[in-house]
Image (cartoon, rainbow, N blue to C red):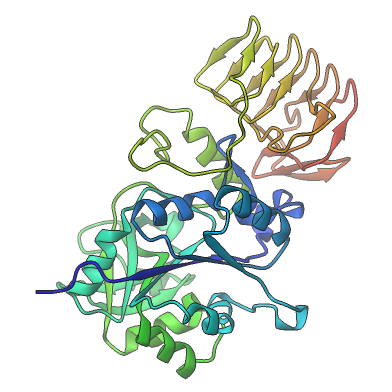
Length: 398
């Protein structure tokens, strides 16, 4: 009988620069960006690992890592090891390089399998099932995979599998039509894509990192592993989102305001763990609220809030209207009450932490711009973005 519960260590890759998520990543490491008003993106892979019973967790960080380390330390004191380069000369040049350079520390674990995750993806997955599948099929590498349509296929790794779910061919982010056509699933208009979630046998990971010295799992080492014929695909059909752009970040947040869509943050048996805030419930004065999330510690005097996420300790003045927007709020205690003033109109916007917006400000993208950057105001994918720490003066109109 196959062993179904081997020892597993989780490795979360949290060191990417996150350039496509700028300007949010100008002030935050990508996995430290706020999500859902009270979480950080890193909370999701950590929580899924813990909920799966895998509590030996390593986080490999790099860019702007101080805030990320601070959050992990205060959320999971002493139980998660954060690994960072000691000098810039030792900075990681890719996902595989990051694991390789930290391999001596990882191998201090007695784990038989390593679960490798990204620090910026959203999902609710029981990884016990994926590991059990890896054990049952005696796979050296198991890749979590999901069906996607053509609009997403060219930005992901694509797989071809046989009846036993053995991966026969893999290509990372194909661009040309001929290659895409080779990966269309039979009798569908979909493709089977890698989710960037891997389960490696211990010895197989060591040997692969040593024999193939290239930098990246997706572009390099996965193809090498597939060529050895002991790679399988674990099929997943639930919610999954890779936060790669401002648009995907914005949409993933607003999905939380819909019933039964997006990430499930209300499952009492599989909670999303984050830093305790010990804040009071939100105080709301004469505000019309529709399909929105209002987080703890907020003081709301607005006229209307609809289809929006209002983060921790948000202060919103009288007469203000907020529609289809994400306000990250103020996760850390501050002496100055950052927030939005009186009589403002905010629509289709992302307001980062510690932003101070004056009275009678309009952020509505009147010209319908898809890209813009001036005076502390950015537009990406038609969405207004105000970076952390920005001050917008009274009567400002955009």
